[in-house]
Image 1 (cartoon, rainbow, N blue to C red):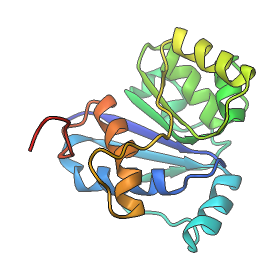
Image 2 (cartoon, rainbow, N blue to C red):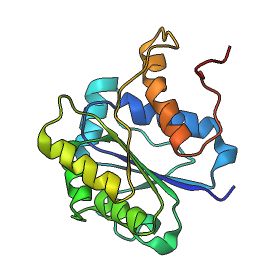
Image 3 (cartoon, helix red, strand yellow):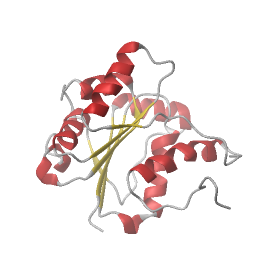
Length: 187
């Protein structure tokens, strides 16, 4: 499988989402060829506060700094096919929706959109104001996918990880991964 995936982690609350996403992708290693991650400074701080642990790096993943424009996904020739921003702050969403490429995350999102590849933004804010909604509309019209970090409960999750997994599994489905998860109407 030649899939190349890029995960961007912003400073919005919800570190459990990229944590679970990375864990599940590592368990499905046969479904991707390259997995890259960029975490903003705020994301690393929120990660520490929410998980009680410093942001750590897994050996199978490529890590890049937020201003490293030499990263392969900063260009369409890098052939990264999917970008997931999880969690996606409203500031990041606004910059992407308005074509402001001021760091590696926003540049990579611009590349994904211009190449007509898959961009999934796991937005994490509540409530939304009109600017948020307009930015989500603009990004959707440009080809991005808005997947709010809104868990479902029909699978009767018992732990916070299971609750978060209802979002993460949906993201993995949207990204085209073959995963084992609760499916409505199946036993």
